[in-house]
Image (cartoon, rainbow, N blue to C red; front, side, top):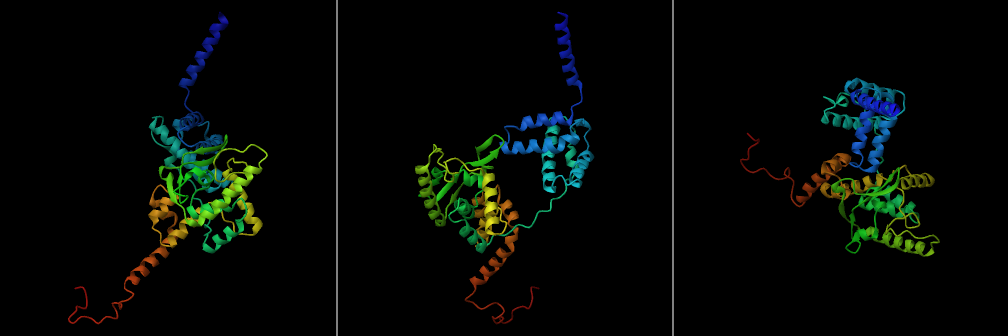
Length: 350
């Protein structure tokens, strides 16, 4: 009886201590991560958890949450940057996650102000993007012909779809005699394996009109897939996927990107990321005079503003096209400078 009472008393003492002990950053962030799990995509949650565990907790975990200052975060960012452990871009991502986490602490009335709001992450120096023009794209299409990268390359260039969207496409997603497709899912690599998820944003769930350019690629893929299915010695996975890993199963998006890079190095081609094909689609359409709103819809951007900001380097050429278009309206007329001035016409506006 004495031992039972002693054990019960110890448990009560532990609970009381935990209830009255100051809440540390580590304990709070654990609760916040638990709160976020299920509210964001699995791969997003894994990114949050990894950034916090690897880079925030070692320095900030033992701090009392209520005593955390902007300077504590500033010193964390400065130390990570000075030691060369992380790129400026990764530190910025850490800052954004912590800003979100401590913002929730304010809403939960655990903090009166967000300490991350007073700290500044280093500004990443983004390398200049390699522009995939028409000539380079034609070369990429030629070099990938007959390889497993043929159809993904053609799809990315012709539709501007993200790699996860391309690799999650099913034959049943093609409609209207294969002249249009529906983007209704994306394939995401997670710690638990490959997962089919809803598109990133509501506007990512979209319909894309397919150019006739893709029809031959689809027909060849259909034939090759049928041959592999007939010749398969192992059970075929009934996924209905257009692009599969050889047995009907899904292709890991990371494997696609890695294999794409190896192919380009082997062929001596410029270091074009697979995602750059999405940018190529947008750039080539804009240069051809396609309205930015249509380009934005094909890409699945949340707003046309994102499209205009991302492809601002194309806008100067569009300005020139606009001026040339206006000149074309009066191509059959003499310019104003060649016309004789009307009698009595004023020499100025006032």
